[in-house]
Length: 250
Ligand SMILES: Nc1nc2c(c(=O)[nH]1)N[C@H]1C(S)=C(S)[C@@H](COP(=O)(O)O)O[C@H]1N2
Ligand SMILES: [Mo]
Image (cartoon, rainbow, N blue to C red; front, side, top):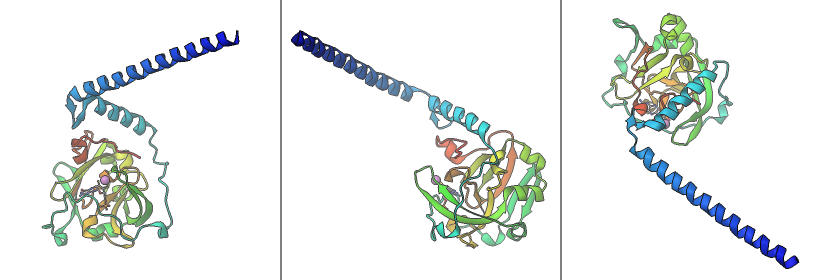
């Protein structure tokens, strides 16, 4: 009796093991088939089409839950690194003439305001110390100062413009450019930034003016802003064209 029970048990174990192995191989085969299928799909805006669909779906879910009352975590000043890493250099050409720089604020086609750094510095200054996150996987607590984009929008009468879905920003040489939803632009922690660690921005960190937008990954923090315009259509975006997520929210 005891012996028989044991035999049945062993048989059962063997059968179960076989079934488990079978499922395992079916799973692996499924992965291979899916992988091959995925890589035969057409590209859409730099990414394989099914992946782009996933990114776009995430975007609609995350932007639905986005709230300007939700703030990124802030840190004390002494938590900030003294010499932040310099990452991208696209659009920071050497022939840039800082002396003649002005921000081109395109309110409408044919209606562009030229704004100097001193005019921006005359607006209320806001500082933020937060964990800057790059999509490549590193992050750093860094300290920035400048004018809140929402304060800037109020000063320059951008009510109508910021009701459109997007802002488009670009370097003076148009080599680097980003598109950002205006809900994120108007977030209270989004800055037109002219200071790092209490000093003017270094050249390679975007002097004279960069974007600091803690609700987004690093790719959207455009250094050396040349122009800003507004649109209901998605403005062109450098990394989006390389297949990255357009929204890139945190
Ligand atoms: N003009 C410009 N801005 C840019 C980039 C760039 O290549 N050119 N790289 C972006 C990326 S990917 C990151 S992570 C941050 C890095 O900012 P930092 O160099 O000040 O660390 O800047 C962003 N802004
Ligand atoms: Mo980045």
